[in-house]
Image (cartoon, rainbow, N blue to C red; front, side, top):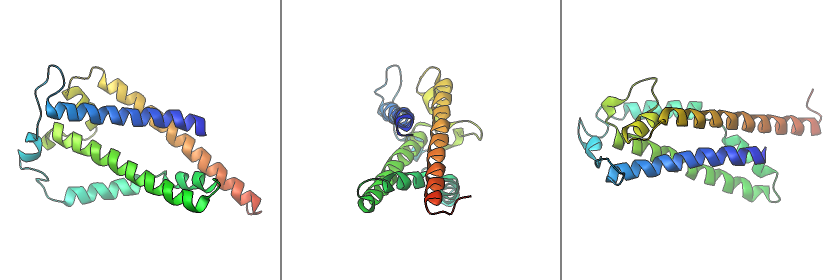
Length: 174
């Protein structure tokens, strides 16, 4: 589990970091052959949150409902030498990273693309990368999504096997 997850996570985190860096460079106009995007998409066309907080609340509810995987952090941390300390540290660290990557990504997306350009069924990550001139953005993101899928499968396999093992140790498994 650990070795595979290290490489899966490295690719996922690397892709998001590259996305964030390229997005910030595009906003500042530091990419070759591009004009600075600036803050025009946050202030123009109705400004930030032109339709109010309803969309944000709806989006947050969807994300919270669909989000899974944090429990694997606690399962892995529970097997350390000092689980009481490790679980708390692992969860806090995961929450901070999630906030940084999700909020950072959303900020880049809404800064680079106008909210009117969003379309259901199209990846905003690919649209941003296309807008700033990254060739083959769709194929690159498909690879990243596939690796993320493998990572989720790996994490769920690890978590479920640890749960079955724990139940078997207590005589509660079939």
